[in-house]
Length: 359
Image (cartoon, rainbow, N blue to C red):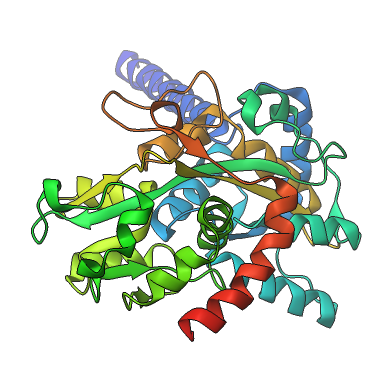
């Protein structure tokens, strides 16, 4: 009888222990499903966004590795919401959006272009949803208030300088300033992106046209540069040895490639590296409005800025500084055109570019 009671007691204790363990497991699972936020507003957005289940993000702000890292971190921060990341060039993204608008079948929820002129146009045509993220007031002052009506917000920034292949060119022989690219010794040795595809390159072209006039590009064309599409193509050309100097080198992509062991180095011209201010906005008619708003909040979080600087881009948040030894906008002279100059200038330089370079 005593053995039966002892056995029963052990069974009860064992069962109780299993229930406690199960309870702890459920508690941990519940905690794992909690969003990474303490804001009541963002928690409400999260609950509504979970019912939508996903969002689609068209982005030209970075290379695909960085874009995917942001998408996966968003999913980890807000379990139950899938981020469909579509990385492309700015002009291709805008073309896709235009086709979706025309067809009345909007697929994209959040558009992140490097051509701020896209947002000027979309806002004017009433094709953006106004939304002011809570986090918009917490970013660095330089990135605040580009649209006072809250239809789009700066969510990314980057630097354009020059770059070169260190195995094929000595540091003392590399170009130092933008105008050095016009020297005939660089004929057939320069890689460059295309303003008709890349918002980064479009802004760069507008800036250098303002600095030097279109004569700069007419002389550059005589050196027969290899013209890619995305600004990131210049890094690919340097790594492949097809060209040894990049006229449009994105600091983020080139520095990330160099960190992996590729023989590349950035050059920040004394006349100024071009600072790219890149916005995001929510498209009107989005299928996932709450997920889109939540994603806009995420892009301006410290966690997103940590990913940006981890991939050699600029931080949006003052409390997130780049690691020692990493060059950022505060370390070099920067230049950038106004919103108006970009909006009117990029279509102009695309036309001039095709006439001058034949592509």
